[in-house]
Length: 445
Image (tube, rainbow, N blue to C red; front, top):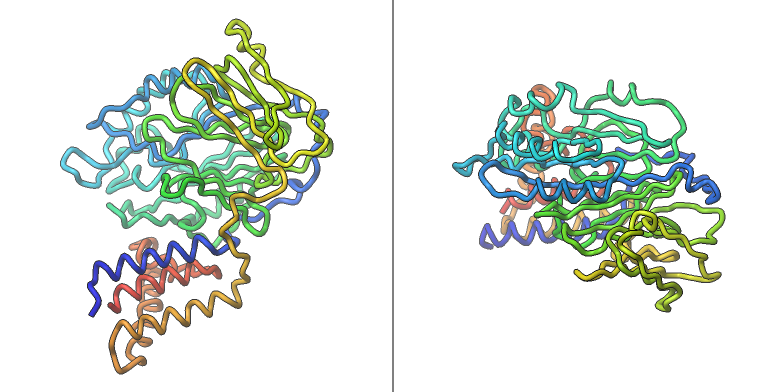
């Protein structure tokens, strides 16, 4: 018999390896038609804004943090607003127990007072360990909200579990507030941003929501870049965890979006506003200019297909007036790279205009065909490792394991959602079945 711990490791490794390769569309999010319209760059300057996203800050009253310094630093960048996409607090008390405390939130919101711009918070699983009272001082009863800004709609979605389970039992989230979705404005927007803690691979819902871009966190930096372009056109961008100062600057130029990731330090910060990476599906009528947003640079160098096409030195007295730089774009160009330099080092932003660099390992497979082949092999593997002469007993146990919890959960809404959520709201995507098969694989071993 295979060692149980080793078997569990193999199962999880196989699960994440296969699911990371499947290019699927989660039915929770659908794209809007107006996003497919081309944008006239002549109007770009009229509605330009930029904002900062941080996520998984995991602040604790029992650990040192640098949030006072960080928010003072963000004030120098002067964004229009800041969004924290969850796990604001660590949710672990001084005894090492999973338990959300008011003291943790006090630390974060005390530092937040130093921030000059508007800020928004989406709850994560670590923010809701154990009980609800720690949230009452800072949040209304309804944690879902939305706001409009310069022709865009931002939807802040709470996927945390209502019964506040502790530990890893709320790694998966669930959304069931249909009333909130019905109250969202029914207007045409240049872009709709869905901001939530849980990526779509860990968020369960029987409802759909309209969006162009998903901003989330939760998965930290187990992969260097965790971005997906769903087959229906929705772009999902998973943010890196804060870890003493990692953050993301988004630019929105009349509906054209771009972003770059940075560390909290004195190095330059540069974002290519336009044109944008093919991943982001921005359709621009007139690609005649390269437009960048920069902070703290003494010198800017712009490359097109590896060749330097522009260099500019910036006097410190003129930093504000040179925050946005615009130059003519080469007639033919596949890759653009902008590098900012100062005495502390350099930072760059590179975009690819013609290839989907974030989908290199993905496979576009219709759900109804090839994935079932994997599932059959998985069943055979379970049977072989079980070393049993009766496959019928295994199949009966697996059937009961998916059907009985489903009935139980429907009687006691949202109880033990982590264990049985895929049985409750089973969706037609490969990962749902892989999750069930993985847990069954562990149990049967």
